[in-house]
Image (cartoon, rainbow, N blue to C red):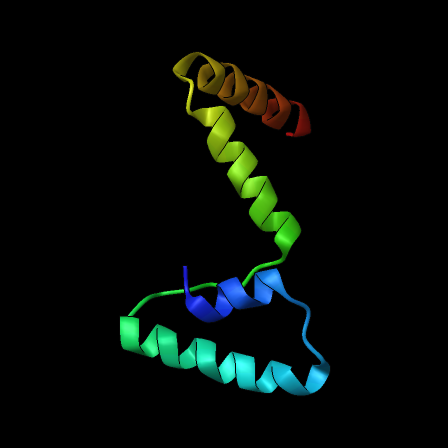
Length: 75
């Protein structure tokens, strides 16, 4: 995880520090040649939960079957 992102997660910053923090994050990303995509925390939590639920092959089959069923109902 990027150092500046960890810092942001651990502390709250006054508004004036946000620009400096974003510049630091940008420098780290450029130096690491890392691709990033900012997204809302709720969406990240949802993606993590989905990944967790799909780890089990049996659970993944159940969820995908339910998704297909729901999609058919919408058509």
